[in-house]
Image 1 (cartoon, one colour):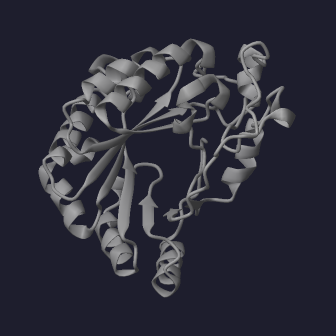
Image 2: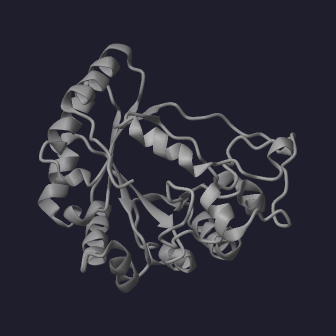
Length: 283
């Protein structure tokens, strides 16, 4: 979205107060814009821990984590999970996507500093687009040296509108072999894997990595109005498919690539689809 009103300190305090009283959630995610630019972030983490949150995660591009002192400050304040955006496996592609020269090196340095810290977990997230889907296996290989990298996530891009005006949507069919190769490498390394916004049936034996559930989200209500423009669940087999995780195709994807009727297939009823995880709150 081009605009999004932030949550206020009063709204954050309401979440903290509610959890302190009811212990509704075990984890809190602080995100939006670039969370490390907020000077009060360490204090928010301390307040969250005092309010009964067992884990505090931040979602960040990770550049400020290249400062060792800042990493230490966040960890001492109670941040124990770092969800870090990485767009590509090399500096040239990553910096071209972020449009910030030197961003890859800073993010990588932050990951390396976190890797030397006890009692923290790191997770990388890659928004998969037409610009980077071929790099997924290389990305897994690039981070093979990180000991505390618990999980890598691949979220397939959607544009929050009816058309792909920026030309960033990746074809699921073209991306599939690269995604499968990355999944295999992560399984071999014993790391966690999550994939979002990808047809479950295309994943085959790897469909257990698809996870589209989201934590309780506190956000500008305008987000949901815009979100509805995506038009998810547009699959020709939706009425005959037992999947509870798959979002099917969305409007912009179908406008660009069609309905893939010849490649998709309904999943049968005799599957264990699991249960949603409602233990996190995201602000």
